[in-house]
Length: 253
Image 1 (cartoon, helix red, strand yellow):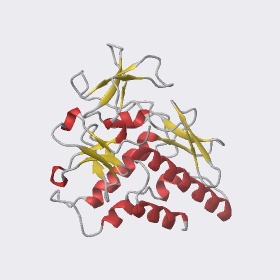
Image 2 (cartoon, rainbow, N blue to C red):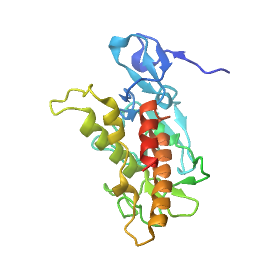
Image 3 (cartoon, rainbow, N blue to C red):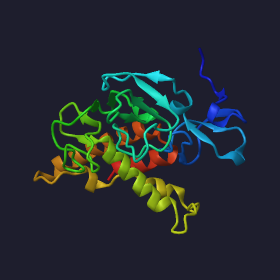
């Protein structure tokens, strides 16, 4: 079966949704999470309705190797109060898969359940998705995320590059929001490339505090940046041209 580029969805039944690659970041109207890559967009431009591919194609139930029980889809979490995704640590505000446990059920964004188990850079560096860390995350210097959940992580084959999915996602969202939106809440349309480049984590996220030679540090930074680039791409979708340019500038530092 070929790729379906035009669909109808119950969350926006009045119009067709078309598979497109938006020119700028968008908020998914299903899970309420930021996206950069291809998505299903309302055929009427004035609607500004978007759905991640994973949200548009969500099934009534699914499973994941990290979950011991089946996961059921909900357009909103059944439980009241604050809920967080057990993969990325972000708040659950819309579409969610939840396990069947009545007490403290686990929640997952549809897009998080589609995170690739292995990411490979062009230099051969490999990152593996892990349910929990055996060593501290290089960003937060903890095995748990800031809100106390264990959270999923990507760890390199050598074990030297370890980042919580939550840490990378949170950093990108915060930096992007700081630049992309003005103080009055309006969108900064004057320089979207600056907003996207500012969303890329800087060296303070990537470089651990350790003593080593200048050459070793440069090699470590280069590999760390590629690791971050892979994780961001896995989280938010294939990078747009602007993000690719930003990555290339960072990697050439």
